[in-house]
Image (cartoon, rainbow, N blue to C red; front, side, top):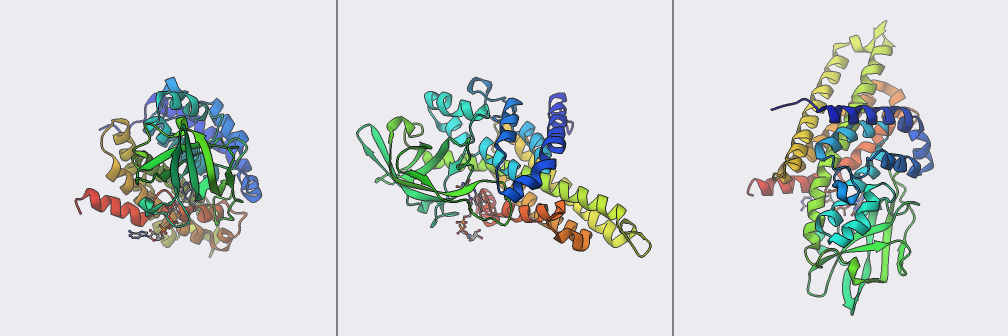
Length: 377
Ligand SMILES: Cc1cc2nc3c(=O)[nH]c(=O)nc-3n(C[C@H](O)[C@H](O)[C@H](O)COP(=O)(O)OP(=O)(O)OC[C@H]3O[C@@H](n4cnc5c(N)ncnc54)[C@H](O)[C@@H]3O)c2cc1C
């Protein structure tokens, strides 16, 4: 077993750390207050070959793999959680259904511009009446000659409303009950979007409703052979869970660092609060939890890269890492006292950004169902 990062991964880590510290973190507060996704920084990630880490070179990606992706996410997520959340949805659920289940022509047409960072990927599964219970979705897919027609509503969809969004890959059901995935480009008649949600956290992430009103598209917009749409979506959610776990690790790590630095400089009763054993024990438990979550996340990524089954490990990593993030950031706010409760402090922003990690891309209750099923229950 080798816990060393390769030279390539170390170079990637240094690149992403510099980006996070010099480009992302200094402007993150501005984007979050303006509720604006920083497309210009996303494009910069594309220029650095960071927007198709799970996509082979022949389709415009870097072929970096999941371990490399997690290395990059650990750093970028410490720069800004909203940007990293958008990058996460782009690299995994926004791209993988088309890459893994699309035709050769679809990969070249739709995946390549995503992997180069020219376009932002979006995945539209959740509906107003069906989130966890995916199979109960009601978006209708019918066919008329060489055209496919889509009618329905998708809710809480990230990345679809920015100036570099291309549209969405979405899922509906045909009259026989088959799940059909369809690529819907922006500007298609009948396809509109709602206003961005006013969210508790991830303020710079674009998240909106998507409305399909008799949207007609050529049949080559149906993913693959028109069957297996549900499998395509569920498989990319499995991979997305490793990514959300890495995002959670980055948040927990940032909160731990903030709290440690604050405890060393904040004085009470004549000494830095870091001298109190009560504070030291908090920091020690936070550090232990972050390390455990990190190892689980890398284990799941390692399995993914080797083509081994990873569903259970991805769900475990997402469950543990997201709970670690909410617990660690809560303690980090506690260590900051009142200063942790004002939005100017970085730890307060992290606190707002944490809870969604237990909800998005499968709630933690659903992760437990996935794990229990893998145990044979
Ligand atoms: C900021 C944000 C961004 C998002 N981005 C996207 C996106 O890009 N694309 C997309 O498709 N979706 C997206 N989502 C939607 C997200 O994936 C769903 O909110 C999530 O899957 C939960 O679905 P729901 O909100 O309908 O909750 P529900 O499914 O209604 O669940 C409500 C509660 O019941 C629990 N529950 C449900 N079923 C069970 C069960 N069988 N056993 C035990 N407990 C259960 C849940 O765990 C939860 O606690 C986003 C959501 C947010 C808030």
